[in-house]
Image (cartoon, rainbow, N blue to C red; front, side, top):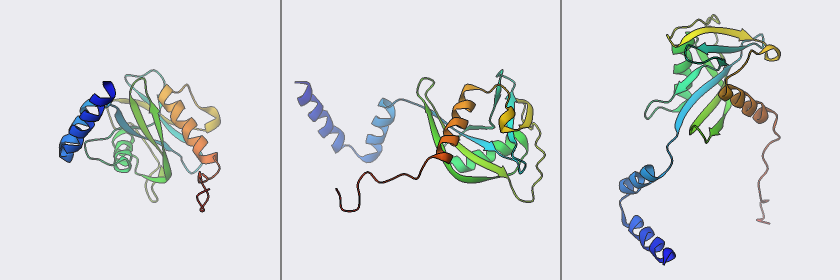
Amino acid sequence: MVARLHRVLLRIYRSLPVFARRAVVRRLAPQFTVGAICVVEAFDGKVLLIRQSYRNHWGLPGGLLRRRENAEDAAVREILEETGLDIELVGEPVVVVDARPRRIDIVFRARPAPGSETIARPTSPEIVELGWFLPTELPRLQHETASAVRALARASYAPPARPLRDATGD
Protein backbone atom coordinates (compact mmCIF):
# COMPACT_ATOMS: atom_id res chain seq x y z
CA MET A 1 0.00 0.00 0.00
CA VAL A 2 2.72 2.49 1.00
CA ALA A 3 4.87 1.54 -2.01
CA ARG A 4 1.91 2.03 -4.37
CA LEU A 5 1.15 5.46 -2.88
CA HIS A 6 4.81 6.37 -3.22
CA ARG A 7 4.79 5.44 -6.92
CA VAL A 8 1.61 7.47 -7.52
CA LEU A 9 3.09 10.51 -5.80
CA LEU A 10 6.27 10.17 -7.86
CA ARG A 11 4.22 10.08 -11.09
CA ILE A 12 2.35 13.21 -10.02
CA TYR A 13 5.66 14.88 -9.13
CA ARG A 14 7.11 13.92 -12.52
CA SER A 15 4.17 15.55 -14.31
CA LEU A 16 4.72 18.90 -12.57
CA PRO A 17 6.60 21.67 -14.38
CA VAL A 18 10.19 22.21 -13.23
CA PHE A 19 9.40 25.36 -11.21
CA ALA A 20 6.70 23.47 -9.29
CA ARG A 21 9.03 20.51 -8.60
CA ARG A 22 11.64 22.91 -7.24
CA ALA A 23 9.01 24.53 -5.02
CA VAL A 24 8.01 21.12 -3.64
CA VAL A 25 11.63 20.17 -2.90
CA ARG A 26 12.35 23.53 -1.26
CA ARG A 27 9.26 23.17 0.91
CA LEU A 28 10.00 19.60 2.03
CA ALA A 29 13.82 19.66 2.27
CA PRO A 30 15.59 20.82 5.43
CA GLN A 31 16.53 24.50 5.37
CA PHE A 32 20.17 25.49 5.95
CA THR A 33 21.93 28.83 6.12
CA VAL A 34 24.99 29.15 3.90
CA GLY A 35 27.94 31.28 4.85
CA ALA A 36 31.34 32.08 3.38
CA ILE A 37 34.26 32.45 5.78
CA CYS A 38 37.96 33.00 5.22
CA VAL A 39 41.20 31.97 6.80
CA VAL A 40 43.15 35.10 5.84
CA GLU A 41 46.88 34.45 6.00
CA ALA A 42 49.36 37.34 6.09
CA PHE A 43 52.71 37.06 4.34
CA ASP A 44 54.39 36.43 7.72
CA GLY A 45 52.17 33.37 8.36
CA LYS A 46 49.80 35.00 10.83
CA VAL A 47 46.04 34.41 10.59
CA LEU A 48 43.37 37.10 10.91
CA LEU A 49 40.75 36.50 13.62
CA ILE A 50 37.84 38.62 14.79
CA ARG A 51 35.82 38.92 17.97
CA GLN A 52 32.15 39.73 17.46
CA SER A 53 30.06 41.75 19.89
CA TYR A 54 27.62 38.87 20.37
CA ARG A 55 30.16 36.01 20.75
CA ASN A 56 32.66 35.19 23.52
CA HIS A 57 35.46 33.59 21.51
CA TRP A 58 37.48 34.44 18.42
CA GLY A 59 36.28 33.57 14.93
CA LEU A 60 36.99 33.90 11.26
CA PRO A 61 35.68 36.84 9.26
CA GLY A 62 32.80 36.05 6.95
CA GLY A 63 29.05 35.91 6.82
CA LEU A 64 25.92 34.71 5.09
CA LEU A 65 25.47 34.71 1.34
CA ARG A 66 22.89 37.07 -0.08
CA ARG A 67 20.22 35.73 -2.40
CA ARG A 68 21.75 34.63 -5.70
CA GLU A 69 25.26 35.64 -4.57
CA ASN A 70 28.07 33.19 -5.26
CA ALA A 71 30.28 32.13 -2.37
CA GLU A 72 33.49 33.69 -3.72
CA ASP A 73 31.88 37.12 -4.03
CA ALA A 74 30.33 36.79 -0.57
CA ALA A 75 33.68 35.93 0.99
CA VAL A 76 35.46 38.92 -0.55
CA ARG A 77 32.54 41.25 0.32
CA GLU A 78 32.27 40.07 3.93
CA ILE A 79 36.00 40.46 4.65
CA LEU A 80 35.98 43.96 3.19
CA GLU A 81 32.84 44.91 5.16
CA GLU A 82 34.13 43.54 8.47
CA THR A 83 37.84 44.39 8.32
CA GLY A 84 38.40 46.88 5.50
CA LEU A 85 40.86 44.40 4.00
CA ASP A 86 40.93 43.69 0.27
CA ILE A 87 41.74 40.00 -0.23
CA GLU A 88 42.33 37.44 -2.93
CA LEU A 89 41.12 33.87 -2.55
CA VAL A 90 43.68 31.07 -2.76
CA GLY A 91 42.94 27.50 -3.83
CA GLU A 92 39.74 25.55 -3.63
CA PRO A 93 37.33 26.01 -0.73
CA VAL A 94 36.17 23.29 1.64
CA VAL A 95 32.60 22.83 2.79
CA VAL A 96 31.65 22.25 6.42
CA VAL A 97 28.13 21.03 7.16
CA ASP A 98 26.93 21.41 10.74
CA ALA A 99 23.63 19.53 10.85
CA ARG A 100 22.36 20.51 14.29
CA PRO A 101 22.24 24.30 13.72
CA ARG A 102 21.54 23.59 10.01
CA ARG A 103 24.54 25.59 8.89
CA ILE A 104 26.80 25.18 5.86
CA ASP A 105 30.07 27.09 5.72
CA ILE A 106 32.16 27.44 2.58
CA VAL A 107 35.67 27.97 3.89
CA PHE A 108 38.27 29.76 1.79
CA ARG A 109 41.96 30.41 2.23
CA ALA A 110 42.79 34.01 1.41
CA ARG A 111 45.60 36.52 1.61
CA PRO A 112 45.75 40.29 1.36
CA ALA A 113 45.42 41.37 -2.28
CA PRO A 114 48.66 42.49 -3.94
CA GLY A 115 49.17 46.20 -3.52
CA SER A 116 46.56 46.47 -0.78
CA GLU A 117 47.30 47.51 2.74
CA THR A 118 47.53 44.66 5.21
CA ILE A 119 46.23 46.86 8.01
CA ALA A 120 42.89 45.42 9.04
CA ARG A 121 40.55 47.24 11.40
CA PRO A 122 37.01 46.67 12.59
CA THR A 123 34.76 48.37 10.03
CA SER A 124 31.47 46.85 11.18
CA PRO A 125 29.59 47.47 14.45
CA GLU A 126 29.47 43.71 15.04
CA ILE A 127 33.29 43.45 15.20
CA VAL A 128 34.76 44.61 18.53
CA GLU A 129 38.32 43.44 18.02
CA LEU A 130 40.55 41.80 15.46
CA GLY A 131 44.08 40.53 15.48
CA TRP A 132 46.73 38.61 13.60
CA PHE A 133 47.83 35.39 15.33
CA LEU A 134 50.50 32.80 14.66
CA PRO A 135 48.90 29.40 14.02
CA THR A 136 50.78 28.04 17.06
CA GLU A 137 49.42 30.81 19.34
CA LEU A 138 45.69 30.93 18.59
CA PRO A 139 43.28 32.23 21.24
CA ARG A 140 40.14 30.31 22.22
CA LEU A 141 38.14 29.77 19.03
CA GLN A 142 34.43 29.57 18.28
CA HIS A 143 33.20 26.06 17.51
CA GLU A 144 32.54 26.93 13.84
CA THR A 145 36.01 28.41 13.44
CA ALA A 146 37.75 25.37 14.90
CA SER A 147 35.74 23.08 12.57
CA ALA A 148 36.57 25.26 9.55
CA VAL A 149 40.30 25.35 10.31
CA ARG A 150 40.40 21.56 10.83
CA ALA A 151 38.55 20.94 7.54
CA LEU A 152 40.87 23.27 5.63
CA ALA A 153 43.94 21.63 7.16
CA ARG A 154 42.69 18.13 6.30
CA ALA A 155 42.01 19.19 2.71
CA SER A 156 45.47 20.79 2.41
CA TYR A 157 47.27 17.63 3.52
CA ALA A 158 44.99 15.03 1.96
CA PRO A 159 46.41 12.90 -0.83
CA PRO A 160 44.88 13.49 -4.26
CA ALA A 161 41.54 11.76 -4.71
CA ARG A 162 41.61 8.56 -6.70
CA PRO A 163 38.79 7.38 -8.93
CA LEU A 164 36.58 4.66 -7.48
CA ARG A 165 37.05 2.67 -10.68
CA ASP A 166 39.87 2.57 -13.17
CA ALA A 167 39.35 3.63 -16.79
CA THR A 168 38.33 0.10 -17.83
CA GLY A 169 35.32 0.15 -15.51
CA ASP A 170 36.61 -2.65 -13.23
